[in-house]
Length: 177
Image 1: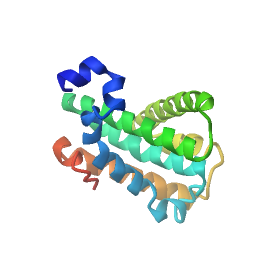
Image 2: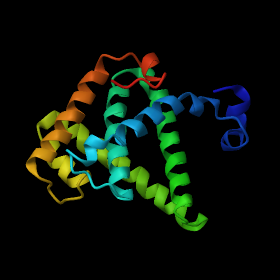
Image 3: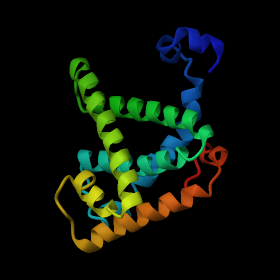
Image 4: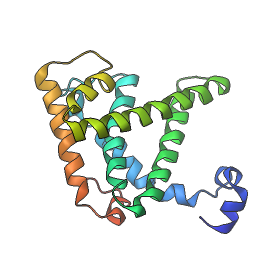
């Protein structure tokens, strides 16, 4: 972070500082683009609703954050992606007409949801309970058709595995395998 941005904190970001967060924009945009791919909603039966789109962005973002956890150099990009996520969710809520007083509470819930999903997916991938974590978090407790669940689980596992071989610098360009 530049010295003037560090001194100004959130004010520096608000009034044009935040260049570090902007470095994560291509990667965050790639996450959203990947999460909006039709196959998640058609073959994967993820509900194409506001909640379903949030859950899918959180799932793809979680796979990326798990990748960034693998290296110390991933801490900074992970923090910037979280900032981008908050900015995006804030804008989406406001576009839906939600007022200032409620937006802060909703953002807090969304960040808690992202953190919970990150932990659930991390544990599920490590212990073999990934499908159960998807049913709880992506499908909100309602199991989809087994083929749809298999599609989503396989594609997210593949994404997670493919991300391992991509250097962080390349990810920051907005490249997702």
